[in-house]
Length: 167
Image 1 (cartoon, rainbow, N blue to C red):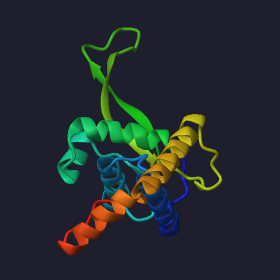
Image 2 (cartoon, rainbow, N blue to C red):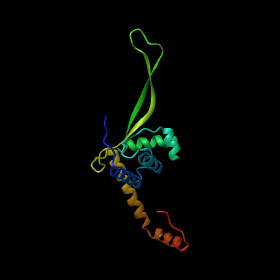
Image 3 (cartoon, rainbow, N blue to C red):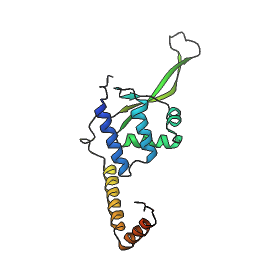
Image 4 (cartoon, helix red, strand yellow):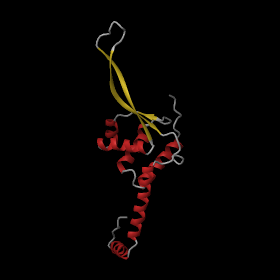
């Protein structure tokens, strides 16, 4: 299977898409860190596939193991990555008279493939659309709450004290 190389422009577009998902609060900070490291640190220039172990990702990003596993599932769900499980076949025991060997399969590192299509043309799944709509409504509600007389007064008091109000 031959994959087309991943251009720098396409990698930048994938990064912008992931930042947009993070801005909508659909990706957590740790998920974004994992994606950023996979895209810009683990991936060789022009390559579309990488195969780091979970332990390598944990060591390099500083993100907990369970959070890395959840991040990869989330990135696959949003179409940023495809995950392919890989196995290594190991012969063991003596060869039989019929030419067959005893084989066993051992898991090896997964192969991660960066998406090859344009994110703008990919129709989101129903659950992704719902997540985006909920995030937009929550942002609008937070903006409406911030525009009350009480919030304006608190912001003015904080400004005179030299503090900034969290947004």
